[in-house]
Length: 302
Length: 271
Image (cartoon, rainbow over all chains, first blue to last red):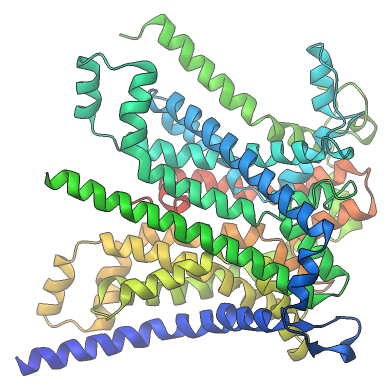
């Protein structure tokens, strides 16, 4: 007995020793900067005037809350998340359904359709910008061929947000498709056979069988997409730089313009607000997922 | 035994996927188009292909330097990340470690950190120690950036390995190091490959940190490509050539990964 417990103790020690380098690095590269940003949020600091730094309590936060551009960026981020994530989920589900029933060709198509996810938002943003060009762009040309009026896309205040959204939806819908598809292909053939025998088809099959069975997967994809949408930066920044005017100034892009102005205290304060929102979303989703798992277990027992 | 309607639907689905990838064909086509045909109002479909934009990207826009920077930074960061992640994930997944679940969740949670929050402190830290615009600085940043994801995915793969073989080896008197070297590493080969490739992809495409922390000496590909727009808005040929050169490795990656990528993309959390 004693021999065994000594062995176990040393295993725990060795394990801790193995995790330690990673932990130290993550504390140094994530927790420590986070603490620093937290401190900055309560200070007046200017990159270009290092001499004026001082503690000011909640002044940075108060300043943000009274600023119109701040509220506009919050509104834009909210609109962005709602539109982009809901369309990606709906389209992604539709594509997954289409691919799910095509066993013979699904492998190739799945590989092809996921390509956008792996390409950098910078490369894809530029590609879309090129295609959106109002006069020489291929999109307006195609619309004209179909007899539709062309748009001004990323170049005008009214349509810029929509144009960037289209690029983002295009890039990330395959991600949703791929993961939902994995969920769908995990549904046991017996369940599908039973549904077929009971003549459960079409809409009813989707809502009563597919969606409930892949619900945990849906929640995970939704969470990942939501977090990425809240902190969206690259794609918007490369296509519009937040403009024209403030038409696409979503949270992270606005935060970056504050950095460019040198006002790093205010910037840290805004960054913290984004972090808090993301944390709330993650906690909410994990709670929901956990509760469902518990309920499922109770149902299984009964 | 396939009905014509089903067959027609199959063709329809293939067609939709083909349309979906149109932006990628279009940018590739543009990258080999002669300059004067790129900005014509009517798209030109047939033309004499040219490599002038590729040459231009290297000669006028220091594409080669950015490519070298990206390669050095991303390869080094990926190797360091993988070594650390493999060791940590092994301990978290296979050893009796108190609080392993809490630790794993803590590491995963760092994946959700918004870049804008910590990029600023990085900037100030690097300014103090002189790491701004340096390769070493970027490698450090990317190790921190990729590590949470790599540990989490690697842990998922390692948990799935059957425990019996390892127990048997231990009963036979093999030490930790030999168990890891002779049994765990060979068995988790695919998991290591997938994790390494994903880490590589994330770093290769990263933009925000590079935007804060590089200026001239250590600029990475996304930064260099974005710079071309700032200076010369109209040179779409050069830009598309650069975009194509940046995305080709990623398309290769997609085909290398094939069906493994679902697991990786889902962050190992779907399971």
